[in-house]
Image (tube, rainbow, N blue to C red; front, top):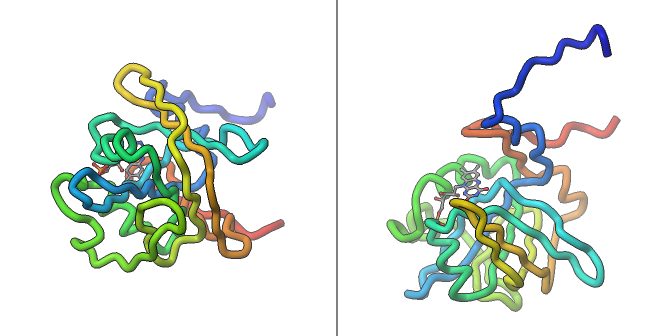
Length: 175
Ligand SMILES: Cc1cc2nc3c(=O)[nH]c(=O)nc-3n(C[C@H](O)[C@H](O)[C@H](O)COP(=O)(O)O)c2cc1C
């Protein structure tokens, strides 16, 4: 340990050390029937027995949050590294301002049991119901329970991980 150089990390950037899972596209439907999707990087598994539950941090100002409170369901899709430009675009504007699926002509399929759209080409998706929402300061923690899930083989190899801003990474080869 003596020879390893550790640099101080600011309290604002400490979270970048904790990011583990892939970015999710939280796909929802709004009150006017407009479908939306927003990238969410702050996510975490919550439980796996008897079924998988997950949580993510969502700004209550997002259209996504309003949709979640209204519809009580969502699809968590895992974009691939190849989709990072679209991830950035969909994360830089609100679904209140534009219909993101129409704006970028995003091909999609429909959820099998949840009324939301799955962007084509994702590594996996999880159809979920909202089970709890906690408010903490200026953010909310949304807990979901998985109702159905679909993935390509070895989906973990393809998912997109976020550090901050436009800085992403993907899993390296097995060693
Ligand atoms: C890579 C990336 C990761 C993001 N992660 C989060 C997040 O963890 N929580 C959050 O509330 N917003 C996050 N955002 C911001 C929202 O995706 C963004 O504000 C989006 O435009 C909200 O859209 P909506 O109003 O249609 O819901 C992220 C954006 C990007 C580009």
